[in-house]
Image (cartoon, rainbow, N blue to C red; front, side):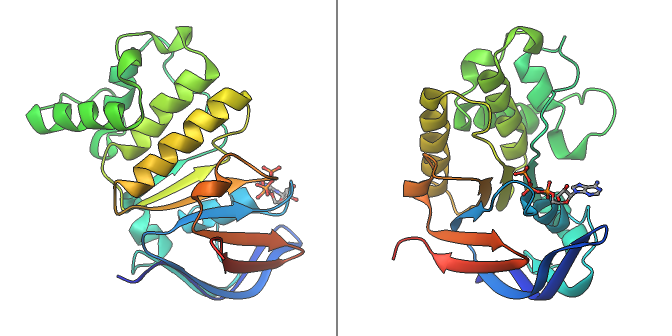
Length: 222
Ligand SMILES: Nc1ncnc2c1ncn2[C@@H]1O[C@H](COP(=O)(O)OP(=O)(O)OP(=O)(O)O)[C@@H](O)[C@H]1O
């Protein structure tokens, strides 16, 4: 696979508003891309579209060589509103709850599942949070657990919706460094929505700029 995400003459609408008009672009597999745009330009809607949660009005999208709804199982998606459910759970149980698409209740994990949870907690730098009740964690700590959840099933593609929002500067740098390391040490394609300059900028290989119903992909290292 050479491209992780391909737009073929795509138009996206939200109600009567056109967010993106006749856009074609191809994001190479293995990229660390920033999705940039001011408030309300359609970053969240675009990420939801990639997950198959919002319809394409015209054209089509190929993601991991499949239509979005078929690729969804292979995508790690971190939505913007992250009020973690079940605050009484400990961090580890919360992460485990995402094991292989578990929908209801807590899965009983075998050795493979337990190793996967350990790995995800380690990658997200959340090992110290494993035994703490989620209700007692800060916003930044909860976010690390949410990131561990998205990493649990080793997805080839990560979609992160404004993961730096609401964090203080130090935590923003920590999160950006963590994501930069994840990208360097894996084959994952990572697409992260941001607005303005961020601590993520220095790790980006590509940028998708959303502006006035157009979306342009550019190489961020040039
Ligand atoms: N469910 C909805 N119904 C109608 N309009 C919506 C809905 N969700 C979003 N919109 C509108 O669609 C546009 C794009 O919203 P979206 O949340 O995708 O933008 P965004 O770039 O992620 O914004 P932000 O940076 O503020 O999170 C906005 O004008 C918004 O008001």
